[in-house]
Image (cartoon, rainbow, N blue to C red; front, top):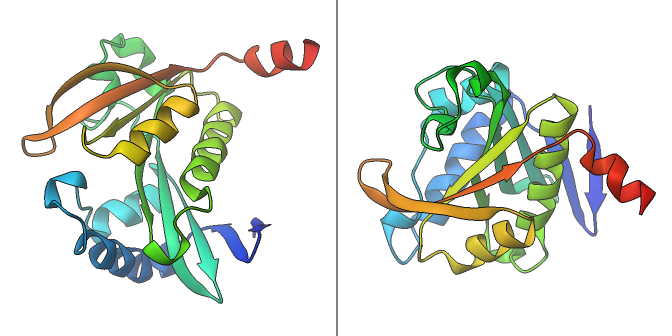
Length: 185
């Protein structure tokens, strides 16, 4: 099992046995948001599919309790592929990955977890040969917008998504030579 420690937090890839804890954390954190439009809730089926075949989910644990999680989606040619929103040709849709939901409990905010999860998920997308990386965020979610932009994502457009909720849509093109170029500098 892949495990990494960041300070007093243990980061690991989550499995199906973790779905109830993921869902409970999501419901708990979202219940205290200023607006329910800030986050598009996922059901257990979505979480299980992303663990088993359509992505990866990573979690942060504090004393064996899940306190944060983050989803990397591999949508393939499915209807949920954000590449269509960005005009990616049908032939390239299998090379699209998405930084989906990230939830961080208030007790561990401010420790850079969202930025860490961005780096982790981008690395995993690169390792798996993805060329396009997309993400959406509510326009009022200042912290998430800042973290995406700090990770090199560029705002492309804003439109209603997820049952009419406003979303900024961000993109980052992954190129295999990026990592080699940075090593050569």
